[in-house]
Length: 129
Image 1 (cartoon, one colour):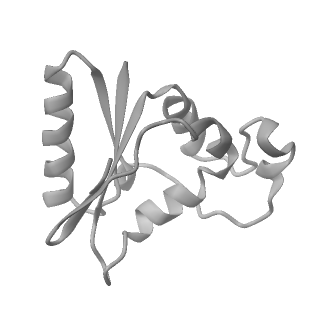
Image 2: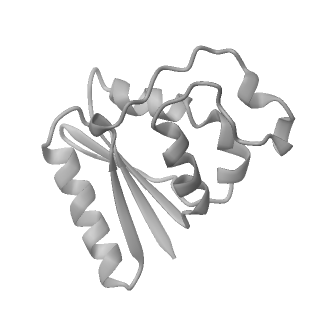
């Protein structure tokens, strides 16, 4: 089993700390973990071309934008669980995490059964598990 943590903070701070603590706890249960720091990735914005939606639910999972998402897609698809962390800006998630989530469109159908649905807010940070 493997759980992927995705940190949507533009800086090293509370959100990253919370995700690291969460993943440490998961790892104590014998589960592999990995933390993806979006601030260290080159992820361009979705341009809404809808090329990724060709094929409907049978889509190939390909985005025409070439950046670091292409190395992340397989990790997300193979993960047994996902944990998203974001600082809270204007009572919403960070732009880094929103952009990342938009770019998961090519693989949405394959993420359908991956656990990751509980939202926790800690003052200036949120965790989505």
